[in-house]
Image (tube, rainbow, N blue to C red; front, side):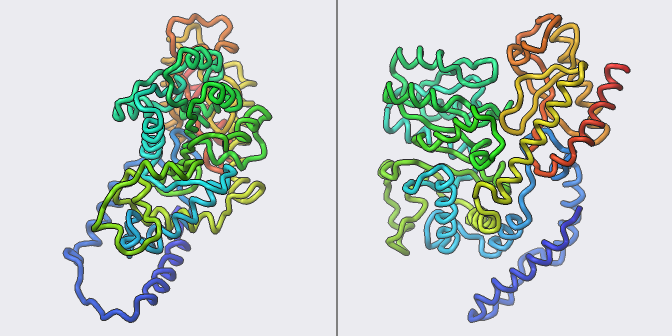
Length: 451
């Protein structure tokens, strides 16, 4: 599994980096504990084996996608300098790289003008989006769908803003009729539209949401942390494609490069359509922003210190794999979706399973057929365990039974939620591994249910 070629590429890049500082006097100091480093690193390697194989195609459970080798190398390369992208004095080169990377992300949404920066993850990025929404409409309610990420409710609490959940339709998307009724009652400051829910990958009906919000003059934030990159994919349904086509009408967009963007963890992104929101961040720090009159990223961020290495890794990845429709990066996303559609087709053809709606992106949810929802929920966990024993790692989710209603004929609904199996097929190589995944799932199911 070890990518020895990338280790050698890192060594060569480090030599190139080191040459750039050749005029400095040599510093002979050795870090404390140098003679014991090998022992400690070997011990760490032993402990890290106590993990699921997140990097392998047979791990198809949570949203864990391995970073591209160029991202790993670039991140490690930057660590020899350890830049801080808060102020230019602490991250001069990496701040410029971050700005370039943000331009590429904003262009993906059709924004030639924008204001944005990287964050430590989607939670912080969404916090900034809702903080700006709260500044623009103080004290007003934030609304998001019942299937939106739980962080929106928690963030609203942190910001001391009221929060309400809008019911979903049978495909786990925000119910626009329910949204219309809520907007008519007034006092809504912002609507959060989810572009790829974390449970099912569902995409809220953006076109209808924008129409409603425009008529009520309400701010719209798009949480595209998971699904945003699928704006580049060419194999979405017409309905889903329509949502992505109008994504640029949002007031703010969050996207997580550490999900589908091939980055190490610690890389989220918030972008605002109107650069004028930068005035809301204005603050004084006379000992920080002294090295240049250029924009310091800390001047448009709630976070202070941030790893410049994240920007170096993202910049390098986007240089290698440009964010272009029809390009290598986009084709990888399309492979993920094809894998999900393939698995969903196989499940539909097997009467042992019930399925929810077809996947919009690359997440599939399903459960064993049983006499009741309670019984199916128990069997789900048994299949989950039997699959794991065979090195196929899935996830378990509790979802409303109405998501499966079309395929539940004869099942007693004795629970409001069904414990179902969830497969996130977010590695491009999953396309070639669906047959192997299905064979293991079939074996685990046969063991659990009997032939």
